[in-house]
Amino acid sequence: MSNSSIPRHYARILSRWPVDNLRPHLAFQTVLRTRLAASSSTTTTPPTAPPSSGPPARLQPHHQTPAAADLRAINALYTLLEDRYRARYPVSAAFRRPRANPTYYDDLAREIGEAPGRGWWARVALKVKGFVRWK
View 1 (tube, rainbow, N blue to C red):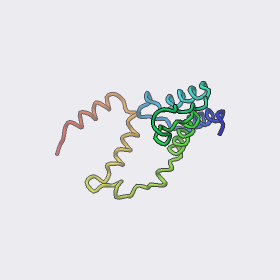
View 2 (cartoon, helix red, strand yellow; view 1 turned 60 degrees about the horizontal axis):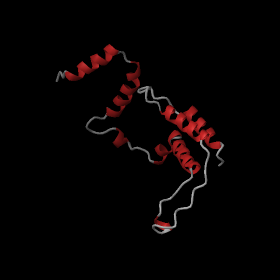
View 3 (cartoon, one colour; view 1 turned 30 degrees about the horizontal axis):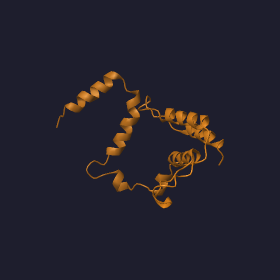
View 4 (cartoon, rainbow, N blue to C red; view 1 turned 60 degrees about the vertical axis):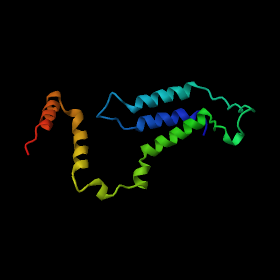
């Protein structure tokens, strides 16, 4: 893969990455944009030879070129974007619905979905409601 394709991959990942509605001020897209700008502005230099003095070559740290590190990062981002780990490591129903509180994860997903559209008064009311237990 050439160095000119690295910015294209970052741009493609950036366009397909989902938006976090719960925390819009902490967008992962801004991190990807800075990485895209950094990878397009830097020129790759060949790795320098390690110094002759010091530990043997087998014990010296592995030096990667910036392009190789970018390609590894792009591959990791694609695995997350395509949700490969969910297919490879499925979660069992017993794990998703614990006996102590079977609706916990469903309630959590519903709460995360409702939270971005909730107003200030609704947040305060839920907080106060959490302090008071009627049982």
